[in-house]
Structure formats: structure tokens, C-alpha cells
Amino acid sequence: MSIALIESITQEVEACRACVLCESALRAVPGEGPADAAVMLIGEAPGAAEDRSGRPFVGASGRLLDTLLRRAGLERSGVYIANVVKHRPPDNRDPTPAEIHACQPFLRRQIAAIDPQVIVPLGRHAAKYWIPTIQIALHHGRVFRVDGRLVIPMFHPAAALYQRRNLPLLEADFAQLGVYLRDGFPAQS
Ligand code: URA
Image (cartoon, rainbow, N blue to C red; front, top):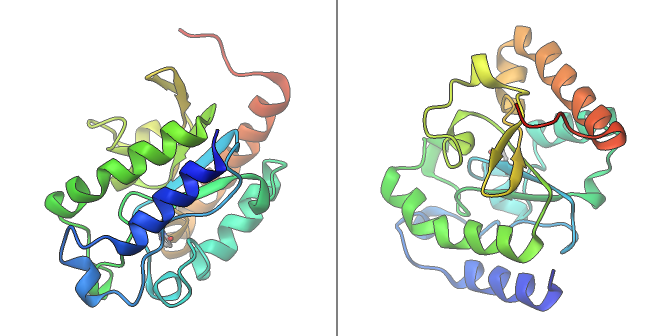
């Protein structure tokens, strides 16, 4: 854990011109949270509200995320929140493979610096970073072990807002995360 390291990655993200997204975005959204967070949440890319504020998950998805975190016994201020891609794609389109590739070193370095025990990728696009063959409808809430970390993919909060049938599944996954954090994670199967 190193606050100075996280700060220097944040500054590099803010200055980044490695892909076209910086041309249309208002500002970068590097990520935020304690440099020693045990839990890291990773979204796909900033939306309009995040683009305006420079902070991750502050729009409608973010408000839902705050509620979900409390279900897990967590506060936003206690977790690190970042995105796979640090600038908003125009019209909220999916980031291209080239944009994801250009941004990857930042996420890799953020994870190395924070060294979280648990990573929660939110949505299929984020989860593919760790589990390329992920089927989120099938694998959400499952504990994967990747590079010595626990990776628990979950639905993206926006997917739960648009498709309400996903909401109870997402709530249950966050509640279960709280149980794991309190009582311990399942042994490797
Ligand atoms: N959706 C994301 O994936 N990330 C954000 O920061 C906001 C919405």
C-alpha cells in the first residue's frame, strides 16, 4: 500500500492521452478510496455524471451502489472504486478493445498498489478482465481465485436498474459478500 503511488497513478490518468476517449470526455475519472482498501470495486467506464465530477459511480448507478455496499456492511469511504476505462466513452457506448488495452496498465498498477483481498468486477465487461469466458448471469456472486486474489463478479448496478429482475440477485450477492467478509470465504474447491 502506498498513498504516494496511488496519487501518482491518479495524476498520470489525469494527464493520459493514450486513446481517443480523452478528446470527448470532460475529465478523467481515475478512481477513489483508501490506498489500503481490502475491497476494490471495478466498473466498466464513467458515465455522464462521473465525467462531470471526475468521481466514479456518482450517478444513478452510484446511488444504488452505496445502498448495496451498506448491505455488505461496507461504506463507500472504506472501499476503492475504479473503472476499467478511465474516460467516458461518447454516448456511453462500450469501450473498444483498443481503449481497454490502452487503459489496462492503470488498473493493473492500481490493483498492485492497493493490494486488495477482494475484487468485485461490476458487469460483464469489467469481469472479462479477470475471467475472459465469464457469463455474468451464470457466474455472478461466485468466488473465483485469480492471481492470489478473490474475484467476485456481480451484475452492474445499471443492469439492475434497467432490468429489475436482476436487482434481488445483486442485493443477495452484496449481502453474501458481507457474510464472507465477516465469517470467512469458502475454501478453494
Ligand atoms: N458505470 C460504471 O461502470 N462506472 C461508473 O463510474 C459509473 C457508471
